[in-house]
Length: 201
Image 1: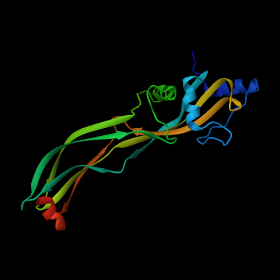
Image 2: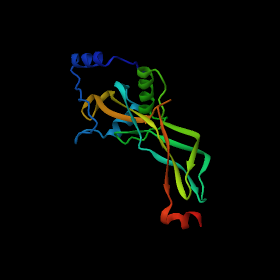
Image 3: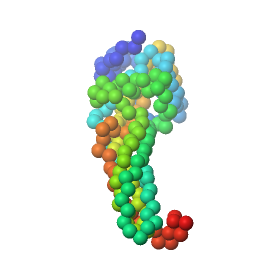
Image 4: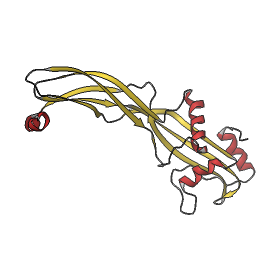
């Protein structure tokens, strides 16, 4: 059973017994393991923990059109349109986050302990938005999801040297949809112009 230890204490203990320590990095050295090899090793290594570093950095995704309304009449129209949009997480190492993975399980534990809530790998937002579209115009509903980016370091211990070291570190950034975030929703219209015949048939 792997015990969760304080990073500083582990480094001190490792130095005391002469264990080599690889400096944290998100890029594998030429003679060392790849990022994927290290993260996959969390399934069988003696010890694997993710240490988050600092508060999440917040941002909003570029807005994307989630619904469209064409007004092919000579008067203004107001409609309520239902829409849904799913946002996924990503990470700086391009690692495939599968919930069965030891690395992902350790990430989720480290995240919850540090930030006191569950991590969201993806988020689906569904809503109904009223949009007023002028005569012979196209109206769009736009949505931008608030995201959070956290940075942290995996600390992985091995019983026998793995690529020449008993301990490896790997830094990773993860960007994911923020729970109950301040999302952006707005509407915008434009005249159909030359597209009128095609849109209104």
